[in-house]
Length: 438
Ligand SMILES: C#C[C@@H]1N[C@@H](C)[C@@H](O)[C@H]1O
Image (cartoon, rainbow, N blue to C red):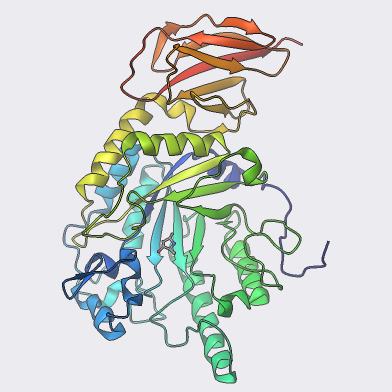
């Protein structure tokens, strides 16, 4: 291995209580809200082809004109309790909220810039009430923070000149000040979800970022920081020059899901997912395929079956309400979770041979295995292959516990579970209680 000062400081998973709680979440909510929600992907009557929260980067948009959106930010219908209640009903266990996206606008009254809610018509802090409303419902809060900040004149994409270096040193102090401010103002926040860390300017700050990460962890023991925050001294991101993951969980799964357990390298990870193809902030027009409740439930099942969490994004409207499509999805997912959340919370990779009918999830620390069924075979027989010397002691339908099944043994530790009905409206879960009969 290469001697590294600023690579991974821990090999393997964190085993402390805070991380074990994060690992058990299963389902999360992302919230992207800010000035970009006002134009919602449209400028001077033209549709921006990119993601709505990237509108400021469009050549048709002048930075000054975009920044003056601050004087229009006035979400009169914003109600943190109502967002948190929707999330509670949906069954999420954590929420990741944008405190500052790439455009640099702060949803909290930061004292290190004027580009905040404090100087908008709304005036009030957004983050504080959200943290309070979610905490009250037992939903942990993670703060999203973009290092890249298009508003701050000291931001640089690369450090080429001495002037760049002097400016970026100021930017690094500004960034440190804002992060320590967030941890001080919102002490119950469980973690930070970093973004906007791919440019050379930040990638070259291995030593600074490493010491800042250490400072934040010292300030907030148990703080959870993902792999996207910093690079090692050779510019390697997420995985250092020895192939070890930096941070507490892998943040590479943005709008994509691993196929098999080998893809996650034994690390914790979360998948952050948009409802349309690629819109995080509120966008008037949702182009392309809009994911359905069943598609999202299958993504959730797949993530949990592969030792990850699934985080669904919401892009609230400029008036502070949630759009109907998202409320409908939250309701549909919530109804399913109301019956089946036992198969999602505290779930982990079961280590069984993957079958076509769906996904296995093992309840951490138990002999309970959940079969999350999405594809019912024409035969109505679900194939189950267990490790040798593992017997099945009980099989029942989670949604209908009186509905027991008598698995048919078809080989060594191989069974068919014959379903009692052919048509199902929604994905369903069968519980296998196993026993070691070695
Ligand atoms: C690219 C990019 C950003 N990363 C996602 C989590 C959104 O914030 C998007 O704007």
